[in-house]
Image (cartoon, rainbow, N blue to C red; front, side, top):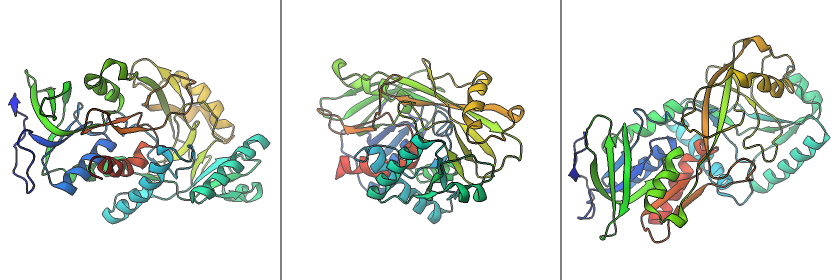
Amino acid sequence: MRGRALQIQRRLFSTSVSRSSDFAHCIIGGGVVGLAVASRLATRYQKPTLLIERHGEYGTETSSRNSEVIHAGIYYPEQSLKTKLCIRGKELLYELCERQSIPHKRLGKWILAQNEKEREILEGLHEKCLRLGVPTEFIEKDEAEKLEPDVYTPFGALNSPTTGIISVHDYMTYLASTLEQFDISLQTSVESLRKTADGNYEITAKSASDSEPFTITADVVVNSAGLSAPLVSNMLLPKERHVTSYYAKGNYFSYSASKPKVSRLIYPCPVEGLGGLGTHLTLDMAGRMRFGPDVEWVDNPDDLVARDSRLREAVGAVGAYLPGIKREVLAADYCGIRPKLQPKGGGFQDFLIREEEGFKGFVNLLGIESPGLTSSLGIAEMVDEVLYG
């Protein structure tokens, strides 16, 4: 290791790293996906592993700013990575939660049909789910009124019983605990990344507590930097392969009244080209109701202030399926930014997960938005297969 040393003590491991590198693995980004990848590579291969995170805590950028939903894997094109990894990740995540007692609930989700056109869309979604092997069933209007009397769904609802919620904080805390014997550098920003003549990677980074940057080398680099992933990728790849970032902000709204009341997640029918799944109703682990996210395209990824000005539109969206909602107790709460690889109206964009051509050992994770949380263990499994399969 050269330059200013990390503020952590190096340890000896049972499997040695190649002589020319300081680390076998360097994972850039300590969100839920980066933690999952680091945990799998470090614990499975027991090789020196470094996780670099630019913030002072794990997952503060995107992972802790979402609906905390475990998705079923039904919205995306059948052959897409989003579908494949969401379904696989869901299985792995529920298994882990049950084994490690990570707080979660299989609440189920209704996707609502407000008119004949939306019912047709949900019929097609149901047919797709049959092909994918994802359980769904229709709840017709009369039954829906008995089960959820405060929800307006005149053309029935598609029930997704494998949808749930999770405490993201507890999940990330567990993943971080598996890395305690390895090296972690928080409040550290990557300043440069290059491939060396030896075929490994040189990473120069700077800690907020240090006046000078430090440089380390690694055999493998996984770019899981979330909103900053395109920037990290562009440090290494030639200009003609650079990626442009776009940002879709999602505002969430808290609701403090006890009525109307629901017992499961409620989603509107998906609208193509919206950039999200609509302003939906979710419940947290304590049963508190919240709405969101909406979609607001912004230029600045640090624009993380929820705006009251978005309330009017949110009330309109939510009131369509929850007519008893009380506007006066709905308030802007928090927001998150979706890392997009296409601008507004750009159509479907799949996860980009690949070892870059000509850069063996460098794996890019780009455009990891929803369902990234649900897919996190599936993504980690795929990265392992890409590197060592």
